[in-house]
Length: 289
Image (tube, rainbow, N blue to C red; front, side, top):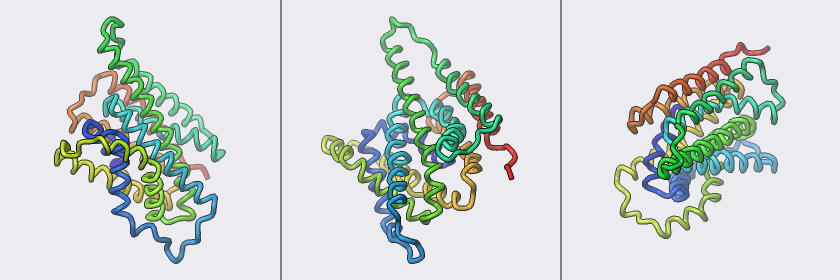
């Protein structure tokens, strides 16, 4: 989750250097080359059933394809700090989706946590200010920030679904094979859009630093974080896995402020505090027997 938060923030300069669909295509392509040897089924692993194949596709479509599209377009319109605050809603959204799809009960603590996360996002929206309607540039920036924040929240919905589906997949497939399979599906889904964007893109204009950041992004987003997450889910209950999502908004905000030079205003700090309070409340409840 710390790695996810880092690459979410660092994707801000990447979307300035590459079109979003081309960036996603290059990410999945580089990661596929790194994981070709993970695609083969181990001898002790049963063949995939149609249901497992469907879950693998959904895991990739929601957690890879849609998450990448929403997140990359979102951070291109808003700040890394704002994205970090919105991402703090993940544990609450996981709880809601667990209730809907897994039938888990939402406790009173979790209900308060959901309210705190919603309050943090609402405060973030208010902190953007209310530009004068006569200032067209300010009004356009405000509208873009709103749309960017909505897209980042869409990425939150995808990430929560990714956590719920991932727990079920780890019961039938190994972490390495899950990682390779969902990345391959991501490559298939984004290839038509990425290839189209590549036809008119000037690759010679990309700096060596941007290429290096792209390699880190590809390996972190598609290989390291997925393998670590799936390996952890084999040994940690899905409800407890939400504890570690606290590192995602913290890392995204820290990179935005410390590396990208963004500022953390008073209202934004309060919004982050509300969101993180919700995370702590939702993930520190005593385990039920």
